[in-house]
Image (cartoon, rainbow, N blue to C red; front, side):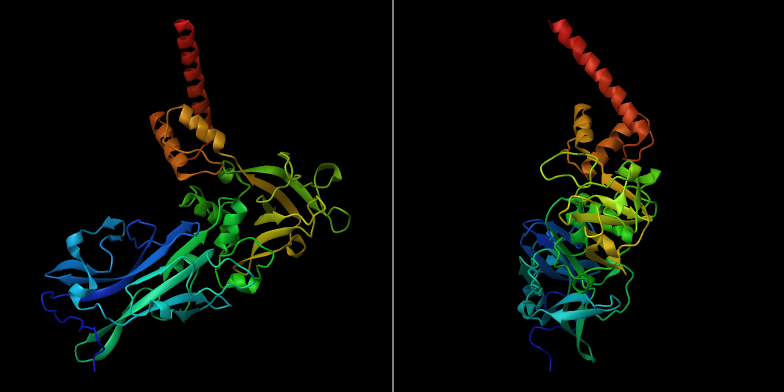
Length: 422
């Protein structure tokens, strides 16, 4: 017996004549048109997920969805190609929604049904609907993946389900980006260490246990830093991902605060700089550039961690907290459990002055920020094109020299103009 509202795949509906090929999810936050790309949302905004069927009628593609607007692979779908469920006889179709989570060993996936979304073409929520709040974690921060299925009937074969990505069991995954399902990520701010922990799917808090974090992500150590920067920009940084963060390839992003820190086995200060002096933290409310601060990148034998907090004594030591990658999971721990003898302390450069300089040079529009944003990259590319420099979008030495000369000439012209006016 056919369930109410189901159709036979390949059978023409009265006035429709549609053959359905696949199902997928599209999502929105606020009033943006639905897209098939994963959502990254800054703040606790309302999220809508839509189940979409893609089919064919008269050799032309059509889409069934409960939204009048749809964007697929960056292309806006014309309204005439979007059908409402009632137009296809699917207004009462059997629909099931699921949330996907990796298993604690990060080798497989488990599905959690979401009964609140059953029989609905749209799943609407402000906090993750299937997320249990553990140890006080805000349920609106992190990353979750979703899948949905719709009941169809193949001719002569009985009921079946057409599912979106992640709806069918698929073991094995290499990294977070290869995970099944539609991804929704919520972030909470623009601090580098905050984004690093959000890349770990949790905020930076001492209660973040390794077991809980492992449910959210598996990654390599460099993802801790570059992944968090990519989240701030909305796209990856232009540069070699495999290169050492303290090498020439990334010197335009990170500057060494301490290039050589020795780690002693014994002593009051296990981390010492030149002449055996301890490495101090920057006191709250002060502006000592050459002291440790929250969000600094600490390389221990080349492996990056992010400094999270001082234990209260004002010195970099084994009891200070850090965010790091261990066995593919991003966790919070102390320096006592992080091996390494050769230590370098890096700090992301402040790109606000460069943004102001690009505005002075007439390149924009852009809003200067302390981090390297996509609009600054675009402005640099345009400047490099105009000066016939290699177009990299990065503030390399040749580009900064050319920008300095250009601004000096502008200042000279402005000074001459003011003198003539007087």
